[in-house]
Length: 115
Image (cartoon, rainbow, N blue to C red; front, side, top):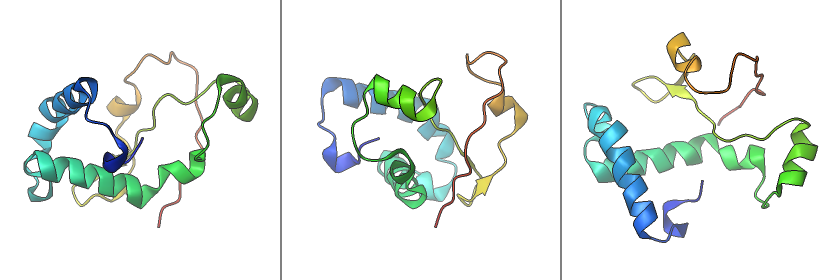
C-alpha cells in the first residue's frame, strides 16, 4: 500500500476511501483515536508504518512470474492483522479467519515481527 502522500486523489481513490470510511471508520470511531475521517486514516497510516509490511514484501515491483518464483504456488492478495482496542496485535478470532473465499486449504504465513 502506498503512503497517503504518494496517492493521487483520483475519483477511484476517493471513492474507495469513502467506502472504507463508511464500512469501517464510522464504527471504529467509538475509539477517540479514530474519531473522524482524518483520525481514522491517519491512524491507519501510522499502523502501516509501525508494522512495516513493506519491508517483508520488498519495495520492488514484482511481476507475476517473480511472485510465483518467490512463493512457489500463489501470491498474496491481502494481509490482515487483528489489533485490540489499544492497537496491539492479538490473535484473530476464528470467525475472522474463516471469512473469505480461499477455500478450505490451510495457509501458513511467516511470523511478522514489529518494532
